[in-house]
Amino acid sequence: MDYLIEFQGETLEVESPTLECLKECFKENQDYIEEVLADIPSRCMPNGYGIPYGRLDEAYDVINDKYGNCAVKVFEISEDGIKKYICDFSLATIYTQIFKEREESEQGMVDGAQLALDMMRNFLEDGHWHYGLISEDGIILENSDEWPSYPKQSDGSIRWIRDGKELSPIIWFGVDEQSPIECWTLYNRANIRNTKVYWGRNNTKIDQEHWKHFWFCEFWSMDWNVLWNNDEAAITWAFCECCMEEPVEDFYKVKSNCLIELVQGDSTDKMLAKVRDYCYYMQKKHILEKSIFKAGYDVGACFADLNKDGICLEDGRPNPVWLNDGFCDMVSEALYGDSQADDIEIDEKYFGQEEFEGPYSSNNHWNAIIRYVDDVEELFYGGWYKYLVEQYGEDWEQYKY
Image (cartoon, rainbow, N blue to C red; front, top):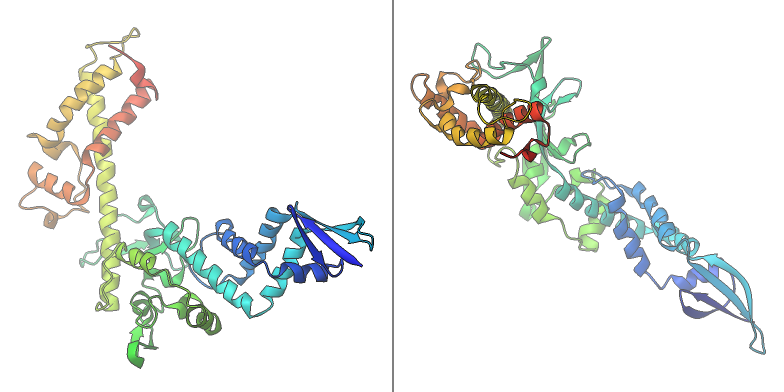
């Protein structure tokens, strides 16, 4: 007895109408597996650590989504050539059985490594550098409005202390809504100074801190022993047997974009000092930005009050578009004229005498401001815009004069 199967416009002869026989028939087509594996990373959070073998289970959902509605019809062909329908199978069922057998073999380790590399690429592309303060119990404050004020101590050191406990400055690379991963994180944690002997190029041994070896690995371009939790079999299959490519350029881009300059020759203490100085710099920058925004609001409110008898709306209020035209002409004088930065409050507990060139004055205040803030005018206008919205609503620009 002969049998035929029909699916997606194709017809094939098979030996028997069983799932086992159909599996053997479809095993030669591996293209769908590549498509399925390539689809998994888009369904998952980018991953910057470990090999997510469990994520291979996502393949079954992908297979069902792609092929769940595709039927493989089985026909019996009699001796006189008459075709008789017997049954049908879901193409998704056949592909699922083939994929399951694949993942139970060594190929499953190869697929896991490839998936990990694809998700790592997404991690490197989608992630960005973060900074904040971390408490002893692991709570991170990214919003500097929540940081303790005036971290500069009487001895000149920079320390953030809350309720008698010190918060450590921290920077890390990662995706939003995901906890920091230790190897991608730089802060004064308990094991930050731990060292280990590593193999370098030309079979040389290197005794180096973990954080430094991670960012300046000399065997691979990236420290896969750390990234894949010492899964030596997967590392061997990926890079020695299958010659998979490391996402080198993406990794180097992340390293070059670090919030501090990563230098191989730096000591751990020097690296941590850079992290501390960066966080303190960003806290002062944020304080100045808020001061500039507030100055724009306050100056704008004063300007509007002084011009309340100018071109007005029917309700007697000054026309906001007319006000805005006049305010924009005045801003350059307010920021860059004789008064310069007098309208921008500078908290001298943060910005000490060393921040200025000479005695406190308008000129030197301005020098301090531009050392921290690039978009002064944009922030100043932002405060003014907030005033207009509060007084006239979001559509204040509709008024004519």
